[in-house]
Length: 166
Image (spheres, rainbow, N blue to C red):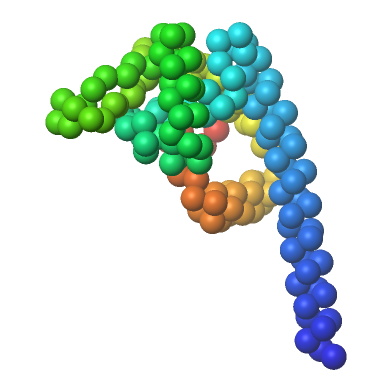
């Protein structure tokens, strides 16, 4: 009988975790939408994701980009076409393998990533500043574990330690 109670408790714990993550994801999606509002006439959310991946990975092959975005190559190609036309990325033939196309951010693409990320960072910092130090430490541990389990690399932080206002 103890095993059923333990299974039920584990299922309830899992349900509570999933509920908390879903609620947090709603908040983060709202922050993302607000941070993209100023550039929504230039890029969609999926296109912005491509820009962020290029920002994190540097020059990238189209096939690798499709894998990183979890889309097929033709979808990645269409996204890249739009970003090239918008002047946000450059595509060039790989000089070491003429069958490959490499993509990289333009300075304008980098500016958009930095601008949107900066707005998102400011809004998240405002929310986190209302938490206790203990809650912040718990959040760091939980989000680090969640991000690692999901295979998401850490964000590049412009502030070495502490908060921007310190």
